[in-house]
Structure formats: C-alpha cells, structure tokens
Image 1 (cartoon, one colour):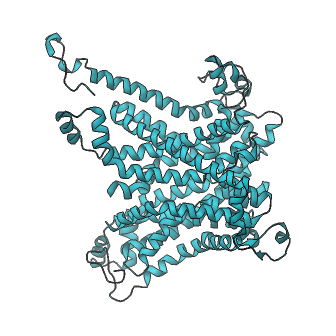
Image 2: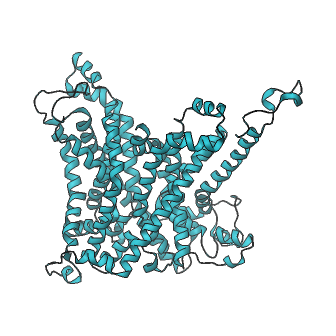
Amino acid sequence: MATTPVLGAPVVRQRRKPVAPYLLLIPAVAVLLLGLGYPVYWQVVTSFQEFGLKQQFGQPPTFAGLDNYARIFADDTAFAVVVRSVIFCLVNAGLTVALGLAFALLMRAVHGWVKVVIQVALLLAWATPVIAAVTVFRWLFNEQFGVVNWLLVRLGFDGFQGHVWTASPLSFFFVATLIIVWMSVPFVALSLFAGLTQVNDELLEAARIDGANKTQILWRIIMPLVRPVLAIVLLLQIIWDLRVFAQIRLLQDAGAPISETNLLGNFIFDLGMNRNNFGGAAAVSIFVLLLTIVLSAPYVRSLMKEDEA
Amino acid sequence: MTAVVTPPATHVSEQAPRRRRITPRRVGRWGLSLLGLVVAVVWAFPVYWMVLSAFTPNALLRSPTPRFLPTSATLGSFQRLLEGGSSFWPALRMSLAVTLLTVVVVLSFAFLAALAISRWRFRGRKSFILAVLFIQMLPAEGLFIAQYKMLAGAGLLNSVVGISIIYTAAVVPFTIWMLRGFVAGIPAELEEAAMVDGLSRTQAFLRITLPLLAPGLVASGVYAFLQAWNEFTVALVALPKQQSQTLPLWLRSFMSASASRGIDWSQVMAASTLIAVPVIVFFLFVQGRMTSGLVSGAVKG
C-alpha cells in the first residue's frame, strides 16, 4: 500500500520510487535520533549496568543484568514512590476530567456572554507557565501573608493562622493537586465543550418530546456521543500526570519533606543527579517510558485512524 | 430544564411580551450562569492575584488583610526587577536565544517533514507517522538523565546549542503533526495550475503554497516558542551554571536567594508576570489548533 500511488492522493509526482520525501525527512529524523534516540539507547544500556559514583570517576561500568529493575520493587523507598505516583496520577486525572466535563456541560447551559467569560478564565489558567503558576500558588498558600490562610481564618478556622501547607506530605499533595488540576482542567473542558457542540440540538429536543428527563438525556444521549473525546482526554491526563516533575520540584522549594513528596520524575532526579546512581535512575526512567508507551498506544491508534480518514 | 412545559399563560397580562415570562427553566439558566461566573472568578483569580501583587507595594502585601483591588498601584517592583545590573537581563537573553534558535530550527525541519508526509505516498511513511505520534508522548522525565550525560560528554552543558538540540527533538513531533494538517489543507492542484501558467515548480511553491501556509507556520512557531520558553526540567539539569540560566530557572534561584531575608513577593510576582505575559498573548493564537490537534482523532472517529 505504501509504494503504490494512491488514487486521489494529493500529488503523485513521479511514477518511479520518489526520492524527495526521504531527503525532506532527513533533518527531522536526524535531530530526533540525536536528541531522543541516543538518550533512549543510553538509558536502556545503562539500566542494565552498575553505574554509580565509581563509574563517574572513570571506572568502566559493569553489567548488572536486571539488578537495577529488581531494586525498584525490592527497595521500600522506590516502591513507595511508584505507588504514590500512580495514586497521585489517578486522583489528578480523575478530578481533572470530572471537573472538565462539569465545566463543559456548564458552558452549554449558561448565557452566551457567561460562556465567553468562563472561556477567558480557562484560557488564562491554561496559558500560565508552570513556573509562574507554582510561584503564584506558593504566594496564595504562604503561611504568613497568603490569601488562603487569611480566608480560612476569616471563615472561623483559626487553626490555619500561620499554617504551613507544604510541611506535611498530605497537605503538600493537596496544594500540588490544586495546581495541576487548575492548569489541566481548561484543556479538558474546552476539548469536551468542542465535542459537545457537535451534539445535535434537534436530537435533544426530540428526546425531550419523547419524555426523556434531564438525567436520561445526559447519560443516554450526550455521554455516548462525547465518549470518544472523553476517553482521549482521560488517557492524555493519565499520561501527563504520571510524569509530573516541575510542579513538585518547585513546590518542594517551599520547604517540604523531600523523600516523602517525591514522585517518579523527582525520584529519578534524586537518584541520578544527587546520588550519582545512574544505573538505578536509568532503570526507573525505562519503567516510566514503558508505562507511557503502553498507555499511549490507544491514543496513537486513534490518531492513526484519523490520518487514514 | 426539567420543566419543558411552560405554565399556562393565564397570569400573563396583555402588555407583557411572551419572552418575559419567568419559567423555572429560565430561572435555572440564570442560576447556572451565576454558578458559571463564580467558576470563572475562582479560575482566573490566581492570574489576577499575580498581576495585582506585582503592582502592589511590598509593604502592603505584608499587611494582615489582603487588598483585592488595585487601590495603590505602583511600578516599583518592576523598576527594582529591571534596574541596571539586574540578573533578570542575562536570563532573558538566554531564554530568547534558546527559544528563537529552537523555533527557527523546529519550523524548518518540521516543515520539510510535513511536506514529505502530506504530499507523497512512500514506503515507510506510515511508520514515520507512527513513530512521530509515539515520540510525542515520551516524557522528558524519563530521559533527562541520559540527555544530561550526552550533553556533558559532548561538552555542551550550559550552551544554547546543546539545550536547543534537546528542545528541538522534543517539539518537532507535534509541530510536524500540526503542519501536516495545514499542508494537507492546500490542494496541490493550485501549484500545478500555476505551473501550467508558466511558473517553475520552485516559483509556484514560493508564490502560491508558501503564502497559504503562513498561518500554519506562525501557529506552529508559536507552539514551539511556548514549549521552549516554559521548559524547566531539561534546563534544570543541562544548564547548571548561574550565568546560563533560562528565565524559569532564574526565577527559581531568585526566589531561593531572597528566601533567607523574606521573599520580596511583589518583585517575584512582577517577574512571574513578565514571564507569563508573552506566553498568554501568544497562546491565544494557537490554543484552538492545539486542542484540535490533540483530540482530532477522537472528535472525528
């Protein structure tokens, strides 16, 4: 199929095997091989090696088989990080998609100008760079002058006078979740809203006339129609939330128990950059890469389908 | 919305136009609109608070009661941030250099690749598209150690070129995907018609296709700009030297440097605002493209 000229294909300039497309691909392929291909290769090789401090100082790395991988699951710290990351990822992805869907439905129900106001607010949150977002949330949750503590005290929760949010893992992750959900809901809400606008109004009217109530219309008509978009955004959120790094790292700067707040990305950073255990870091990295590839497969398949259409 | 059936019109006087009737459905819509406004205010608040704090004198920010309106706006924090000898400028220069180099290289490489996959059917085309889609999902968090080792080995730590190679590789896949849609949207027949009229292939391409592609190139360029401008993870490992920090790294060390004597929140918010404003402005151009690019498979399917 790939070689035979497709009828109605945009251009089939030559009958013979075309050379031009291969030439055009060279720069992109070269930079991908250099910037990603070689690092993946290095990562795979290193993950099977004992590559620690000694090797940093010139000793050749020794083959270690699956030791580095075995250690991820045998080591309590590493295992805790994996569990923590998965829970964090699922909670964040679930919350993001649930809120995004609620906002999308809300935008359908409100007056036109309110819809525009909501969209502007969502775009602002979506556009804010991670560094700025975390910085603002650190300011909002500042123990002395933060608006959140001030508000909670005003509401009668006196315990929040001077409360340090980042000090304990649970409230640390509460703030981290707020940041991530705040930044990711816009994408989900706007995508689902775009999907919802394709839901035919006449269909809904017909259902209403047939006596369907609001809940029935939502679950029997709207939801099946937006399910494909819903599945994709949920998948993307899971993939993205699995690799949260910058937000956690920047929030840890506010003074947090680092070992108890590390997620996978931060754990890799710690192993590699702070403890010079490149072999261990590589094994965790490969674990994350494999997990991502497995999770992305359905997404990629759906995009391929669209490309053929 | 439950009450589709409107109440009998007996109580409506002659003068009152029909649309003035207050139905439960109408009340429900107003209620939801009110809820929508609350949602919008809550969601926009952090950005509002960032900008407001940037314009508020630091002494006021440290008062026990926050002020929610710009009653005493000042440019003081921006002045302190940007005054002569400020460490903001080298970081801005670094960010601009890295970002612009990345944008130019990404655009040219992705443009050629997008042309190839949308204008030719060839062996390996499908595998290439598949690879591009998968690579898009690879997390930087799984690769930065290897990328650090690679750059260190090549003597490219702290260099604009080194980090731009990594950024280019990370951004090129989605850019190819985005541009592919634009190129496919321009019928090749246009070019062929121009060639029939006597233009050479190159002339036809330059005069007909390229101008039509301009919006696509701008959108993709903005996307590449945003990625490189905001990137934090790779920069953290690949640019360890103070003098070669990009703006996100600079803001982080700026904050920790002032942490001991109490963070100057007004100045920090001014810095955040300066980093965020170009992003927010540019972002508005491309967000539609990004949403549709990311979920198009599902919407169409």
